[in-house]
Length: 370
Ligand SMILES: NC(=O)C1=CN([C@@H]2O[C@H](COP(=O)(O)OP(=O)(O)OC[C@H]3O[C@@H](n4cnc5c(N)ncnc54)[C@H](OP(=O)(O)O)[C@@H]3O)[C@@H](O)[C@H]2O)C=CC1
Ligand SMILES: N[C@@H](CC=O)C(=O)O
Ligand code: NA
Image (cartoon, rainbow, N blue to C red; front, side, top):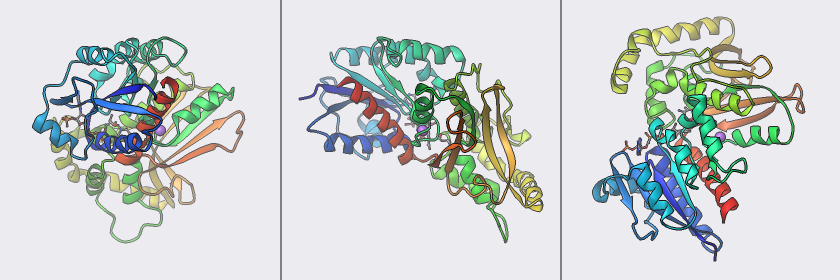
């Protein structure tokens, strides 16, 4: 029988709940070959802890159960100690968007605990944190835990595994470009579709739909200010070998109306947004007159080290103009692939497709340690 791998899950929001459900199915399906026990599940102010390391039940109501029966969450130091005391391998799943938690990854990895996460913060903030995380990890042959973060770019789409494979097999990535935000894709595909006729939808209404569908960041301003895309490009640029100080160290266009930049809560922002629908409507109308649509895109030009994020106009026939739903499209230009890029396309946001990216990372870790 394979050794039992302990799992701790922090964050059971949209992605976290879908992850718990997918992990539960994975554990049942693979019970004869893999033994996985979830021993800790936490949200901000409550946790379920299995002190004797017996598996916690993985139900669809996990966040409600946490509130009803949970105790105070452990500090990261205590959680590491608890997982280490089990005597075996342990994986931490960070399904939050917390920078504080991300800052502790080097310590968690140094303790030999593995990490799988869709949280972009650790990989896209100051470069020192990125360097510390990978130096502490076992990814490059070190003694620390493995860290995988596929869902930080393009949700479950194979974006990071693709760029790593290209580079590790000796190809040279020259340019990466496309649509990197499920939210932004959905907003413009719905608000300014190709060949639109009739009354346009209000931009603020579409933002609300994207939020309710679980595409946005916990705070949708993090999408609309361009920073979510900037974080993804920071990760891809760093994987391409560029030194990127932070996601604000290159040009990033924000779609937040100036007067709403200073509001304090995300609810105030959502309430104020309808007042600015006409501003973005004008940009879409201008493009339409030229036979184009506007889309929110990003690009990394590796030789010139140029990274940028913002709105651009596209002909109706361009593949970016024709995207649907929350689809991302990411084109990798490399020496081997020449002028015809390697393209990855599909849903780039949503709980299920993101959780799939996290679980696939967990499965990769299990394959290395079991
Ligand atoms: N949604 C998507 O399509 C995608 C999301 N991601 C990333 O996945 C992560 C989760 O997103 P999503 O599920 O949509 O977000 P949600 O806001 O739905 O869920 C966040 C969860 O994290 C918990 N949490 C937040 N901070 C802490 C903390 N310091 N300690 C413990 N728990 C905490 C929250 O608990 P509580 O409710 O108690 O505060 C909640 O359970 C984010 O990093 C996001 O960027 C990545 C790709 C796609
Ligand atoms: N808010 C993000 C979620 C995935 O990273 C997006 O819309 O792409
Ligand atoms: Na991905």
